[in-house]
Image (cartoon, rainbow, N blue to C red; front, top):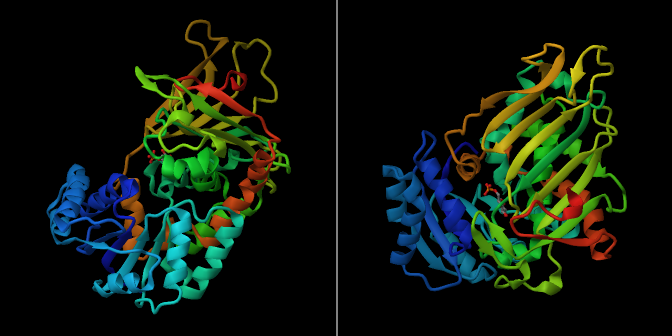
Length: 452
Ligand code: BG6
């Protein structure tokens, strides 16, 4: 391929994702050393004037303004179209110049319909597809969508977007693990007690019921993002970071990953009720506009997984994510086993050493047990702390750079997307059957009391 993208077409241009994440990410890329000129076309079903579209783009670009971003905003266009209509799609594609990238910033069910229509058309040569998460709505639909895409374009032209793979802190796992002899040999079952991958947020629903109420915390975060963080934490060292090696290593460890109990009951779920977070009152989740209480959507999900391979057999990996919690915690925590024998005479609190790679803020802490400052034979805990760089591009900027440069390294490969669904399927089934209690917590709390 080699040639950069000439036109970026965003389907779902009026959506929250486009203005809140995608366009600011594009601005971050355009203002960086990797920015290249392109033609931006926004597509959606509503009537939006070019002037209103320019205003949306300009507002979203404001945080990262640059001469190139201003030019792209000025030349961008809005087209009204139904992405499931062949005629409309042909008209939109007819407006593109150079190589084209189609960004599906749409709910998964609409993306599937749009792809089904596009499969009946002649596609522009070298076209790239970028598909937002969640990829499909379950394992069966993800498989079906993958088989459909295979008939349309080569895998390296399909970008399944996970902006977590663009987060510099997540990518820091690679440097930390594979460029330091002191960590890698210790990351294995004989030395590690357990691993926690947690993304607890203080944010509530934030007017996203249309999407979130159908997804829930398990699909929104664990299936879509945290399993990929698990893959980077637990995979075998790849020979290189090219797309085949890196994604092959991720796929391999995910294939060995399963729920701790096969029936999906090694999981917990809960939903927030009314409460206060940092002085901000939040209504009960079910009272938020657009929420259908009958769906029984969870806003806090936890799953315990195991990786059936030589390195990790028997080590629990706890993945958790929730909204409206009192304290945000977003990190990967490796808890090491205690020493086999503490010499008699050393007193005080020993406890395990822990390695914490914090995704937000970008920090690294190694908690150690050392000789105390007062009595040298009394143990104390101490932390080695480091701030991690935040990277030149935002997470969306990094992912868009890969898309526009046609480098799939940071996109989710088809089989990986299917594995992520396969891993959570038993949990979804157990929850559907009510085999796992549906608990509750007040917004602003630390989660259900029983979990603490
Ligand atoms: C998104 C989820 O993909 O990631 C949100 O849909 C979540 O629910 C968000 O809040 C977290 O990522 P970030 O980059 O905004 O911290």
